[in-house]
Image (cartoon, rainbow, N blue to C red; front, side, top):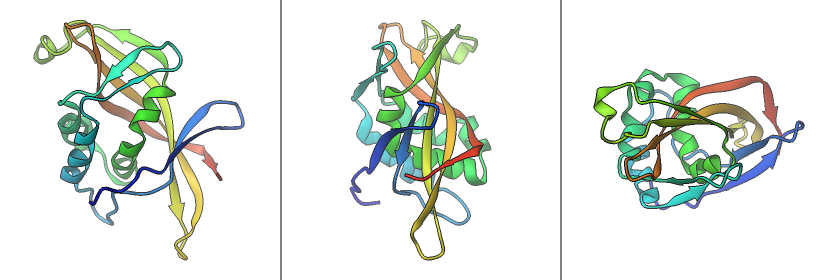
Length: 177
């Protein structure tokens, strides 16, 4: 994939809740997602940081995000719409962090994360929307998804986006921009 420009906006739904609208599909495929391309795309965010508007918490993008996002056990379990949604949510990550809500702390439970998430984990709720194209190639509507941002709290005190999980299509929600 070439250096495609992000086309992302944040809107409010009828209830006043924010949704990150990702206006372009970067990762297309009838059968499967090429997760190596997604991983390569995510590397451009490494070193960046974004603030959660709700609490001004700084969330950093570490070198571990691209590999975890594209190759986690959760990602490997995804099929169909949810796999495509996760891949195509990548361009909206900065805004998804900014609109995140309901941060919840949990202790580290796995030995393998003892060092990289010494201070535990945070999970934040966020939402994004992806376009659905008609046979004529025009956008018909947007499917809305909710998901959780998994944030690791490192021994340095910094919080890093680790993965995007629990992706679920909001069945009664689609939006027209």
